[in-house]
Length: 283
Image (tube, rainbow, N blue to C red):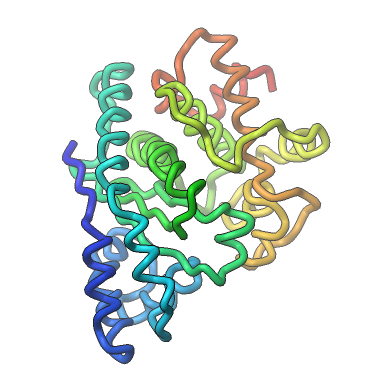
């Protein structure tokens, strides 16, 4: 596996130096290689998609952006080192496990006025379920800068899992995403990292509600069960009475029960089916 951590901090400085009318296109140049590998909008719509995903604005100047980029100095090498360690650990646990030939990592500055990013998400989040790409969004604070490398490891685990386990958006069950989040957090902890703000002890009512719906089909129905009601409303889903990030600690609880029952590590479990893990957890 080749790891390509894009020097996006330098690229974003260049984008912010472009006059406002040209910034969406300059941002599109940064995002287009990733968009080509994902079911995302065409290049002309990438700036809008970026804004909807809590990214920094290209339609107005903001004096906070350049100092924020200064706070990201040194972050990319830390992410790269953490991901190299993660891959060495994973391939030692499961020799021959599949992974994309190249895993690209793109870190983008977030929008400090986006309350979902800065409040609910503590200034950072990631997407890593498309083999070959990890996308990280951050508004730099002491917490987010300190946590972003572990977030990248969490997303890297998704990247490896979905190079080995099929995710069909139409037929996938909620149990797959719940298990995958729990596995990624257990994998991060196994490497000595700290799972993010989404981790914790699940509310017993939330646990029962999510476990009762593990067979729910279609990823479009998952937002409330994984991210909570507020996120579901933001992304066009239906609230079901669950708090923010409800699915993550439920997934970790299921995975920990599986690990205890089998004696396997999280890395050894990366490519197991969610049905097997759920069964091993006694559910």
